[in-house]
Length: 486
Ligand code: ADP
View: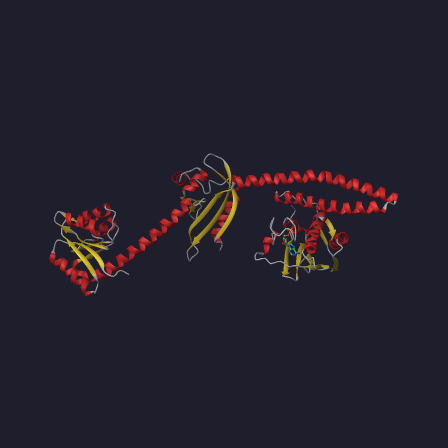
């Protein structure tokens, strides 16, 4: 709050000046007033006096309030300017306000002056604070590595930062003026996705979303961008503004592609010799069996176990690549669910000497599914159950009929899962603990499981208690009409 208001008063009638000073005193306004009565003194005072507000009579002989206001503006002074004059027309008052005066007072209604001064000064302070805030915000917007674009509710850009210009090539003016249709900077194949996401933001309660799409630059280059969008609505849910931050992630995407290609190539290259080794191993096993060489047979069997786990790893890598590229193919047939689970459990039991796999089968049902892929899901869940329960000695598998579908659960009595975001565990490369020495892994098993279950129109989820164990559930629909054919 201001203690003593510094007032610069432009007035050539000493009586009027006195009247005004008295009015302020009456209102107990602590004020330091400098009265000047001509252009030169006004100019000098503007240069030397740090006023909080200017009060000005309209006509001072050869000088008037219009000229005074222009002078104030030219000198870059922004303090409030109040015109105090005898009766004035509405048109005159509007003109003065348009020119930049903050208020006007008629001389025979001076009692309004103290509150007009306080209001104008407070408003001015608020405007200055807002301006400073806006300056800071724009400074950050212009200097972040992300482009900033503001849209109207039709999807047309209203503001475009310098960084946006660097990313897309168009200057703000060029882009804003040249928009013939909305989202003209989106690559045609991604346009329907963007339209849908944008409309969803306008019509629902969603206040923000993030997506990666391809965009087109001014030079016609296709680039990958990550968009972070937020929508500001009023109380009636009308859109006030939509703001986006955008990052060019083309390089990152290219590296990802190279990594994926390398992974695919290495997995394929490993797969071929592994299949051959496995074949020769089996031949050797048969020959040793015929010869009755139990000792060497035992060694070959141990080798086979390791070759099998290596084959499983390579298969997971190949599946991972196919899943990621949306190329996982399903060979679905009608199959008995419980029989499928039993076959896999029998095989898995042979691979673990530490845990007994108990099963409780409810009534069975015929499902339309890819047997190999479901085997893989079950194998993954059971392998995890074994891996993450080193102190336990059993795993319990249940099958039930639930909500027009079959449900499988794999329960372990291990370390449990401490996770804030439950769905993260089904994301690629996600591992609860990065510690590879205790529990080695790549974090792709559950991602593949989730994609396979989704590919069957089903659901996957889990429950867990730290130190007591976890249960992973899969539900698959019975009605083959519901099944996504991927
Ligand atoms: P990986 O086991 O190779 O790391 P997954 O995708 O199979 O990859 O599992 C992801 C993460 O989920 C694991 O790193 C582990 O932290 C957690 N997890 C999965 N299954 C279990 C389980 N049964 N008990 C405890 N944690 C588990």
